[in-house]
Image (cartoon, rainbow, N blue to C red; front, side, top):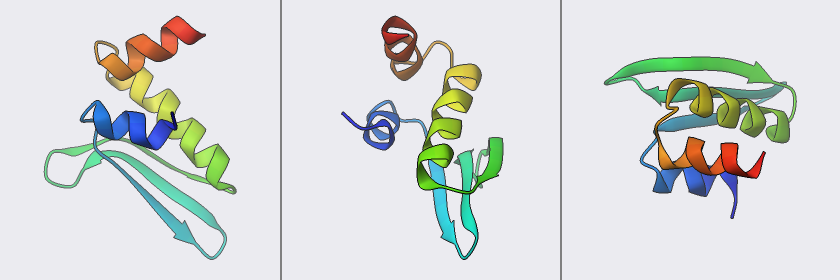
Length: 71
């Protein structure tokens, strides 16, 4: 399964924006505040950063538990 779908199914909000020079990512949402954010040159790097931030900021989530089990 892909990381973005897994985040969605775990009810972890995120944003991923394609820009002229790369990708901006944010974990969480504007209503509840952002837990983490950043910029990456490639989509793959942005998704990896989102995954790592979700594991760090939502350690009790199904998403984090599954990724720790895999690693």
